[in-house]
Amino acid sequence: MNISRQEIEDFLYHEAELLDEWKLEEWAALFSSEGVYLIPPIGNPEANVNHSLFYVNDDRARLDQRAKRLLKKEAHVEYPHSTTLRNIHNVRIVDQDPDGIKARCNFSTYRTKRETLDCFVGVSEYTLVEENEELKIKEKKVILKLDSLRPHGKVSIIL
Amino acid sequence: MKRYVLEDKLKSEFSVNRKVFIDQEILEVEREEIFSKCWLFIGHKSELPKNGDFKRKKVGGRNLLFTRGNDGEIRVLYNSCPHRGALVCRENKGNSKVFRCFYHAWSFNNHGELVGMPGRDGFPEDFNCDGSKNLKEVSRLEAFRGFVFVNFDTNAISLEEYLGNAKEYIELVADQSDVGMEILEDPQEYSVRANWKLLAENSVDSYHGMPTHKTYFDIVATRGGELSKDNLQGVGIDLGNGHAVVEYTAPWGRPVARWIPAWGEDGKKEIEETKKMLIEKFGEERAERISSYNRNLLIFPNLIINDIMAITIRTFYPISSDYMEVTGYALARKDESETFRQRRNDNFLEFLGPGGFATPDDNEALELCQEGFENNKEVEWNDISKGMNREQPLSNDEEQMRAFWRRWNELMVENAMGVRI
Image 1 (cartoon, rainbow over the protein chains, first blue to last red):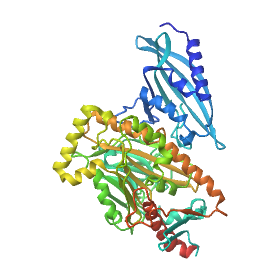
Image 2 (cartoon, helix red, strand yellow):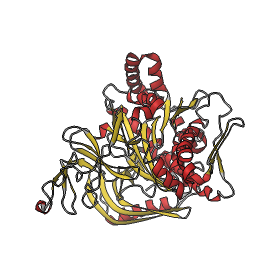
Image 3 (cartoon, chains in turn orange, red):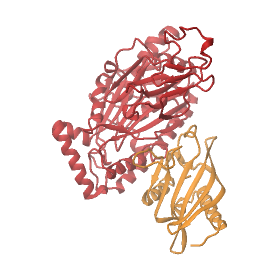
């Protein structure tokens, strides 16, 4: 698969827009059939999921459930929905191999609700593949560049 | 004397004044009477497997070093240079023979003894011969079944006496493996914009389960863990000394050792083997209790050991009356297979923690309570009466919270504020 950085940027901007517009099922559909969504421990992005406590370790089924849950009125933390803004910067292609394209970007994601603004910053690592002639996410790993989830207290939105 | 906790057994009514969640002066008394006198959990022995291992911990507002010295002894040292006060250790964890304060380069071995200082000739020969310039050690450190606690009050009763009836429930966790339990690496460090006591209540509150976590139970149902009338049944118990527990059945799978269809035939085989091991060791009845029943245990004031779809250990401390810092650990059997560890961790992350499908909704509930308390001049009292009209309160009653408040009231109002306020 031959792909330019601009095409990857367009893809990432599209993903960010879906999330900011709370089109979460459309977001889940960006993942390949084996897609995974991960938030490893802060400060230990290469941690082994069996030996360390992650924040999120979603296989394809669970990331679908995450999207569906957040659209329910009973997902209290996000009802009414918070307002979010995602900025994507420093997009770079790291590697292209038969397993897929490895791309990386910096992100700053703002969430505000009940007059409280929280900012999540970090690096997202993507493995992108082609499935049914469409670009899909095989893995999205969100590496938070924070000391802890304080004062945020939670990652209730999708990063 | 102002009263904050009212228990009227005749009317089956239990009330807590909302001022206890917002008042800065009450927090100051809590720092004295609770966080300087009660036994506080610092960590699990498995966190320090090798000599020289250390972890920084914040316990009861103190900056501490949880260490295993070269002699194999576990110690807790104040992370503060006896010379001018700076933190001597800035790494969150590691292994080291020496802690060195960078400010004036005083160095201490991992027993806390001062072993090096520049310009030694400017101090008298007998400097530190009384040990007063060593890293100060927390004087009371005791452990029960791998759970290590500290107490800043030299006159405190022993840990075992303090834990009292709660010991039985800690043992039901500690007994789950022949070779011991271990804490997973990288505990979750998060916060809630609410008073710390709200999380003590919430962590043992089964009454909120269905309304707050409906979306989670919907997902459990897709795994074959259907809710039936036999689920979420059990009891709530005041264990004394402020400790309390709920013990109940639930629809989720338990790595020790309750199977759900989503785990398949292989999973069933491993669960059966685990159960067999438990029966051989503890007999049918205790094995059944360990494997099929869930327990949310509150050790007063702020240690939670929830043995549910996974095991979480949680502590939390007030930074201000409306903001707490939380640390969430996962505890697991050392000897479980990789597949079962994965199932356990999937269970954990799906429900627990700041990225799970349940904990964020708890945070939201607690923060909404805190916001609602702004009305406390006119709307003064919380109601915690559920189940007072029953001889044996159920797990989705509120007896376990009443246990917390009874002890809080003894320490804060009867012992302390009775004099001070």
